[in-house]
Structures are given as C-alpha cells and as structure tokens.
Image 1 (cartoon, one colour):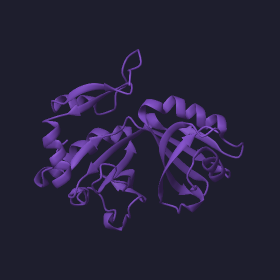
Image 2 (cartoon, helix red, strand yellow; image 1 turned 30 degrees about the vertical axis):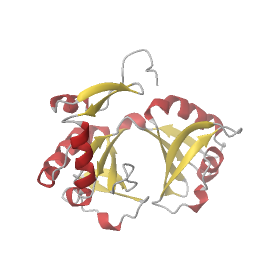
Image 3 (cartoon, rainbow, N blue to C red; image 1 turned 90 degrees about the horizontal axis):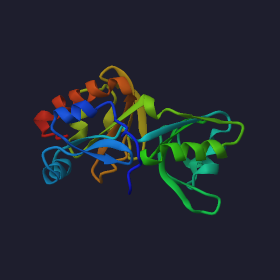
Image 4 (cartoon, rainbow, N blue to C red; image 1 turned 45 degrees about the vertical axis):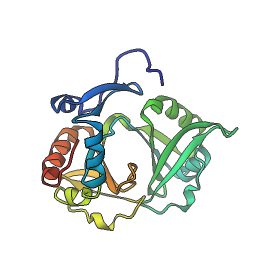
Amino acid sequence: MSEPAGPLKRTPLVDVHRQLGAKMVPFGGWEMPVQYAGILEEHRAVRSKAGLFDVSHMGEFEIKGRGALEAVQRITTNDASRLGVGQVQYSALTTPEGTFVDDVTVYKFADDWYCLTVNASNIEKDFAWVREHLPPTSHVRNASDEIALLALQGPKAQEILRKLTPVELGQIKYYWFVEGKVLGADSCISRTGYTGEDGFEIYTQSQHAVRLWNALLDAGAPAGLKP
C-alpha cells in the first residue's frame, strides 16, 4: 500500500516506542513500531507467554440514538440485532452494490449505543461513508483521537492484566467486552484475540496510554511479556 503524502500521524505512545528501541515504519499514514528485539522473538512470546501491542491508530466511531440499531443494520453486513449488550461482532461496511469499504468490529453498549472499530488507514473515508448513510434517528461521532487501544495477547494475558484491574476477566467470553477500571481509569476490556491467541484489548482515554503501557510491561515482566 502506498503511503499518503504529508506528515505521519502518531499515537500517544510514539516516544515510549522509541525509548524501547523500536524500529519505526510508516503504516497506513501512521508512524508505528514494527519490531523491538526481533520479529521471531516477539512472535514466540505471544504464542507461549504474552505480547503487548499499541493499536491506538485504529478508529472508533460511536453511533447513538433511537435509530442506532437501524443505522448499524443499514451500513454493516452482519446481523447486529443478534448482539446482546456487551457483545462484539465482526462485520464489514459495503456499498449498496456489495463492494467493500472496510472490515469492522461492532460493539453493543446499549440498545441505542453502538461503537465501530475501523482500520487506521480508512478512518476519514469510513467516517464519511457512515455519516452519509445514517438514518435521521441516529448520529455518529468520531472518537478516534480521544481513545488509546492496547492489546495484550497470549496465554498469560489474563494473569498479567488481573494485577491492574478488579474486573473478573475470566467472566469475559470470546467476542464480548465489559466496562470497568484499569489502573483506576474508566476502560473497556474486550476479548477478541485477533492474533489467534487468547487476549484482551483495552480501550481507554488517550491521556492514560503511557501509564497503562508501562504498568502492563512492569506487571508482565515476570511472565515474560514482550512489547
């Protein structure tokens, strides 16, 4: 994929990545770490212990209003009416002709409140598409700049995250989420395990990103956690 012209965007953790010696590369218009100690070592850590990922470049759109479900049903291909509160669904945005706009995950917070997580390189395009196709009984807000997203993946993820939150992590089922405190900050913890290993994705306010990243690395050091 060719990179767009202009300055690269940066997540709240860019300085932390540099301090850790990460190799930084352009990705979807963002400056992102591609590796720290080495891809093979980090791959093995995720498969046998745990790995920590900065995925704060992903986009988040809130859809609210009495027509929120109608909106999600109109713009995504999966059946969002099957979702319970606290459930996540993998889906896609497509044109009326069936061509692809982007793949997304749909989070149901309430009957009148859904959140879409979209790919970083498509945030502006996706937001324009969603806004154009919403029914008048709902509205959408692009919350991407306000939210940091960290992914803790691997067989020891639950053991590590348990040190930082009172949330009963074992009660979160695959492709479900809960709202709760992590390091005392309001957060959303989901369990989609996108690496293929079990794990958690932690959505929190951007200003908490550095503190949370460092705390997770400290908590996970005895378990062999790698960035």
